[in-house]
Structure formats: C-alpha cells, structure tokens
Image (cartoon, rainbow, N blue to C red):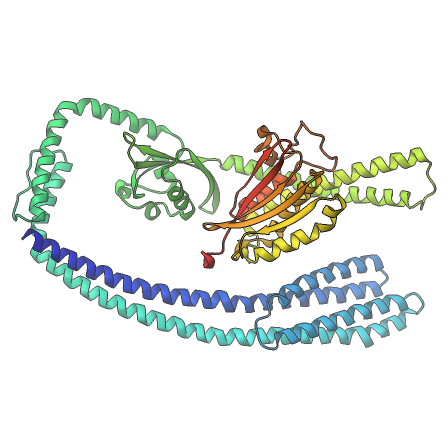
Length: 610
C-alpha cells in the first residue's frame, strides 16, 4: 500500500506539472512574441513620429526668429535661429538613425537637402539686409523663405504619414496576435482546470480523511495540547507521518516541561527588543517566506494581522527591487542598498541592510532585513544638489563674460599691454578657465542627480563606441609620444547603457591616463565575463597610493602626495562613478605607485544577449 500510494501521488504530480508547463510555455511564447513585435517595430515608428514633430517645432521657431530679425532684433533672432538649428539636427539625426520603412530614407535625405537650402536662403537674407530697404527684405522673405519652409513642412508631414500608416497596419496585426494568444491560453487553462478539479475531488474522497485527522491533532498541538495523539488509520505514508508526529509531540512535551520557563523568557525578551526598534524589520526563512515583522514594519506596510506569516515576501511587501537585492545578497552579511518606496504619493528612501542568520555554521536558515529610513537625509541631499546646480548656473554667465573680456584684451581690441600686464591677464585667464571647468563639472553632477531616473539607457554597440573614443585621443597621445592601444578580447554583444554618458566616462578615464603618463602606453581593454562587460583603462604613469584607491571617487579629492595639474577639479571620477552606477555597473581602481594604474568598470549586457 505504501509504494502504491506513493506512485499514484507521483503520477498525479507529474501530470499536473506537465500541464502547468504547457500552459506556461504557451503563455510565455505568446507574450514574448507580442513583446518583441511591439519593441522591435512599433516603438521605432513612434520614435520617428516624435522626431518629426520636434523638427516641425524647430522649423516654426526658426521662422519666428526670421520675423524677429525683420523687426530689427538681430541678435535675439540669430540666437533663437541657431538654437533651433541645433535642435532640428538633433532630432534629424535621431530619425536618420531610426529609418525602418521603405521610402523613409529618401524622404529623410530630401528633408536634409531642403533644410540646407533653407539655411542658405536665411544667409542670403542677412546679406541683402545690409544694403536693401525693408520692403525688399520682406518681399524676399515671402518670395523665397516662406515657400521653402512650406516645402520642408510638407516633406516632414510626408515622413510622419509613412510611419503612421505602418503603425496602423501593425496595430491590426498586434490585435490579431493578442486574440489568438488569449484563445490558446484560455483553452489550455480550461483543460487544466477541469482535470485538476477532477483530481482534487478524487483525492478528497479517498485520501483526505486521515489527513484531516492528522490536521486536527496538529492544530491541537499548536494550541498547546501536546498530549493529544493523531490516529493511525492506514499503514501508508500518512500513517507513518502520524506516527512520527506522535513521537515528535511526545518529545516536545518532555522538552517543554524541562525548559519552558527559560526559553519563553528569552523569546519574549528578544521579541520586545525587535519590536522597540523604530525602523521596519522583516525576518525571512531561506525560501524568502516571512516569519516575523515588527510593529513599525506592520504599520508602514499596512499589515493588520498575523496572516503574513509563511507567505512570500513579494506577496506581503510588493517591492520587487528590495526582493531582488535580498535574493542577490543571500548568504552575505551587512549588505546595504538604498531603495525608493512610494506610499500615499510620498517618496520614502530606505537603507536596506541584509544579514544572514546561521545556526552552528550550517547554511543560511533565516535572513533579517532592516529598512532604515533615510528619507530626511535624501531630501537634504536633494536640496544640496539643487543648491549646487543653481549656484553653478548663476556663475556660468559672469564667467563667460570674463572670458570674453580677457579675449578682447588679448586681441588688443582695447589697446596694447606691456609684458607684466600680459602675464597678469594670462594668469587671470587660466584661473577663470579652471573655475569654468569646475562650474561645468558641478553642473554635470547636478544634472546627473536630477535626471538619474531618466537616463537614455538602451541597446548599444560597445565595439563601435570603444573605437570612436580611441580615435579621438590618437593625436593627443602622439603629441606626448605615448602609445595608445585598443584591445578587445572578442566581438562583444550589445549592452544596455546611456551611450553619451558612458562615452563621457571613457573620455575622462583616457584623458586622465594620458595626462598622468609621461613614458609608456595607455591601453583600453574590454572583455565579457558572465552577464557583464568589463572595460579597463591601463596606463604606465605615476600610480596612486593605496590609501587613495577608494577616496579618489569622492568629490573634490586630490592625491596630496603628487603635484596635480591646475586644471584638475577633483570631480571627474566622482561624476564617472555616478554615471556607471546609474547604468547598472561598478567602478574601481587598481594601482601601484611608480608602476601605473588600472581603472575598471562594468556595464550590463542586453537581456537578449544573455
């Protein structure tokens, strides 16, 4: 009977697992097909339409600038015209890099030619404005420029129409795919439900009576009655389980008599200590099921009973970021991470601290999770960042004016200078340039802090990016007689990064390496390891003392043991660290004084390449 019962349950279990796998596989395939269709096609059309709208806005603003020019406000008009010229080309190149439909590239090239002609017409308008009367200039505007603007707008609308037509056609295909997926998944779910219900009824009638008797005995033991025994109905697995349960409660009864007083006192003491902590604390088992939550945690997460016990973490506390960090930190002590939680339209920040609880050197038995509330500190940091950004922005304008004034003096526009005056002006210019770089870096920090959640992170070709960066430094390395190398171990897969931000990091690391290397070489190396790409910048320069290897990534830190160039602000590596971490990577330094330094950072591989 024992083996027969085991085989029956095993067969039923395997059948149910197979059915669930089939439903799950069908759901996964259907959902993945729809997701790939949306991500691979429809998003491209949306991006093209958005780029067209932004180019139209730029053209209209340039038309407005020309009208301002005709009214006599030339400086204002030129600033507005050139600003929108940059804006037009920004979106134009985004669209040009996003061409996916037949005939779209021809229209893009046509728009480019039309826009170049528009720029020439505006230049001609400026030339004739010097020697013609106002009526002739206005006539030229309406005869030449207005028709050209209409032509560009017509081409842009044509480009938008191409993407809209494709978008609508894809919408119908997507609807058909979704309906088919729903039908397949619903049909399979119905079959599984009917079969599962039949199995449940069969098991209830034949096998559940001994289990119910055993359950009554367990409930009685839970309530403290350790003398009640579970009846043994059959000599099968349930019967053996009941026998073992009876032996267990008998041992518990004996143990309770011996140590009930001291154990209860220690338990109550520990629970009271945990309950008194003013931050949420959650205790999990090694399967991430909740065993305990203190009073502060219950209040914050709106838990009003003990129904949370033995339920999964995400089921009770739906914070995926926290759960992911807990899983990654399993088995490690004192792991920390700042997470953001929104509650009642208010943002809270917690310093999540993970500690593993082991018994007698065994594997992890339980995990404690402390949600340390650092919201006030985060708000203070935001105020500080905003203040730095505001001050830096206000300094930018007067610094620019000073630099322009120094330029006028050096160009002898306001008279000749003697040698001493020239030296003073040169010193002032260098100091202003250094201060301008400092302000620019402060603005960069402020921008990163303000926009850390809106980085343009998407798939990018890291092989191409590394090649571009190396090419831009070849002349600088040649001037110092330094050999600059690119060493890519293999053809690297696509990565998920903000391309411009990571390029800034590479430029900073390579420029530092060349700056602090007098003889030897600078090598840019990249390779794949598991689900990350590692990028290394190695030099044969002066090296960095070990006590500075972590400090150099802090703001305004400069290595005191060495002479530092005046143009160094002590902010570049701090900015690089923020950028790398927001892109999902890490950065660190390995160095030996007199030998050289190696800066290493990681970036994540695209999901489709894992």
